[in-house]
Structures are given as C-alpha cells and as structure tokens.
Length: 188
Image 1: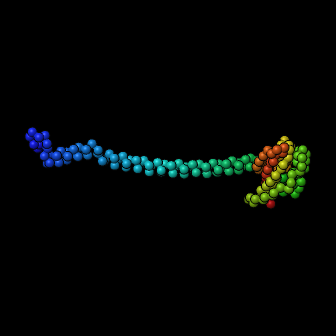
Image 2: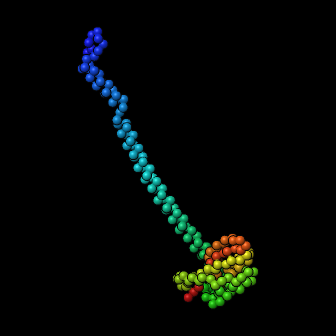
Image 3: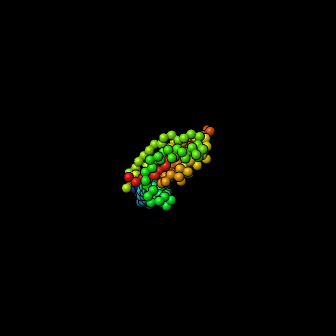
C-alpha cells in the first residue's frame, strides 16, 4: 500500500498496478482480431488470384471458340457457294476440270474494263475426297475498283464452279490494290 501521508506507493503496489494496467492493455488490443484479419486478407488474396487465373482461361477458351466458329462459317459459305454452283450447272459439268481456266478468267478481265490483264496467279491444289480444290490467287493493281469488282462477279458467274474464296482491297494513291483468291472444286 501507499505510505500514509506521503502519497507515495510502495514498490509492490506499483508492480501490482503495472500488471493490472498491462492486462487491461492486452484486453484492449486483442491479438486474435489482428491475426484473424490478416488470415482473412490472405484467403481473399488467394481467392482473387484463382479468380483472375480462371477468367484468363475462360477468355482463352472463348477466343478459341470464336476462331472455330469463324472456320465453320467460312466452310458453310463455301458449301453454300458449291450448292449454288451445283444447282446452276448440269450433273455432267460439275467438277469437270477446265483446261483453259486461266485464259477464260483473263478474257473476262478484259471484258470487264480492267486497265491491264491480271498477271498469272499463284495456284494451289488442295486434295479433298474425290477431287481437289484449286485456288488461284491474283494480285491486281487497277485504277478502277468498279472494273475489278465487275471482273470478280463475272468470273464467278461465267466460269462453272468458280467462286471468290477471299478478297482483300487496299486503296493507294490513284490505284486500288486487290488480292482475290478464286476457288473451284474439280474431280480427278
């Protein structure tokens, strides 16, 4: 206890009071709340990392599905073009190789009003069951876009089984640069 009349505390009383104050201080700062909060934060960060990884995988899957869908759409367009050609051409004409295919396409280019006859195309033959798909890649440089588009339209309608596989148009100065790939299925 404190000594009467002096207002001073004994050493034992001071130590007891310090121990009581220390216990109260610990009660006011509960360690389990700090540890629990840190643990919840760590769990939330792990959950976030897993969610981000899952979103990335989902996006990659969606992009792959879009590429597959685009391929299916392209095949469907080819199939529709083939059906249209098959309907317009008699059964004996379907898929018959055309020996003068390139000269026919050049003659159509002259009739369409192109400034110059297209150069000899790159030819690709892809094997398909029962025949082959012939692709002709033309690189055309002409001042008149209308003439080039008329050539593409006339060639695909006048040559049996020929259809535009892909078209790329680039404007440049006074001329149009165009890459046209025609395709045709032929029996062997």
